[in-house]
Length: 122
Image (cartoon, rainbow, N blue to C red; front, side, top):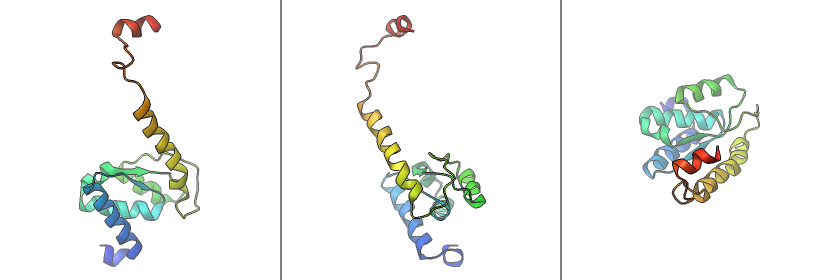
């Protein structure tokens, strides 16, 4: 399918998605082209879908359809059609903030919160 419908760049991005899933590494997909490459990867191995993060939704109808077929909800919806990975570049600080929150946030156990403490503070 890649040889008939896609170019080298789509094949390379598809390969990135395949290897990233093998390495248990997330892939931030940006616009239509990278989402198409990720879609081809998912058609080859459905487990790849678990490692995909959609940066944004472009106004291109094909992008919307691809995101829906992959069941990906984009982090941003800014109606951008700029290319060059702009949506991914804007999504990276959001992902970094999420990772830092997960790393730094106290758990109920570490903060010594019990059921009675939570009920009394409500």
